[in-house]
Length: 58
Image (cartoon, rainbow, N blue to C red; front, side, top):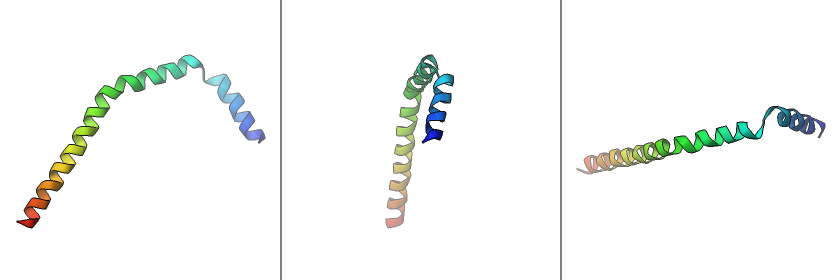
């Protein structure tokens, strides 16, 4: 248990609230780019799978 307390103490002295707000701001800033890319990637994979299925059954 002493290691956990030591790690928590060290991290709390290094990591500040404004650092966490900066990270949160970057994550919310990148979401409008990441979400459409993920949806497009899934759609392309589904389309390729569908074409392979049709070509296999033909």
